[in-house]
Image 1 (spheres, rainbow, N blue to C red):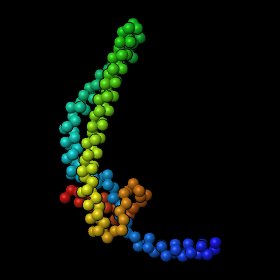
Image 2 (image 1 turned 180 degrees about the vertical axis):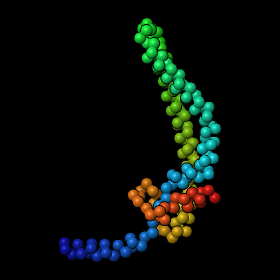
Image 3 (image 1 turned 30 degrees about the vertical axis):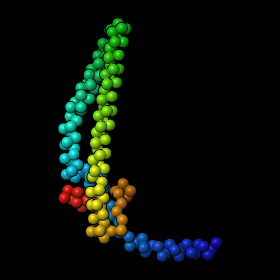
Image 4 (image 1 turned 45 degrees about the horizontal axis):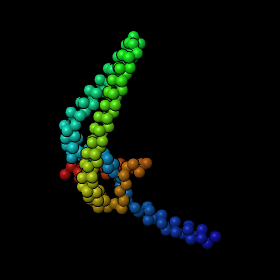
Length: 164
């Protein structure tokens, strides 16, 4: 038992200098990618492509809000059939809003995912360049790091590479 503890301690002592020599950089992939010129252009196209759908969602939401306000304001003075009719109209508007919003969100998310998949090879190549140019052994995503010295945060360099 004592012998295995000594072997473990010796192995750890030999491993520590190797860890101390490891050079590690950090990048915020999300920030670099979504700040890039390609992402800004993609965002503008997305806005144009879905402006009409977003307007329809807003209109439906506003119509539902007005029906709800009317129901709350005038519901007590309505007879039961009028109140039920108005409540039914409100429920239908809410369903329509939820459907339109879910469809819009799903379509936008699919387009964003396609953009990310398309950008992935360029991001990977840029990260590899950073690794080689800075003579690093490892680059970690910023989400996995508690603290990094500013000179080891390579996000701005990655953004420059993505904007070439």
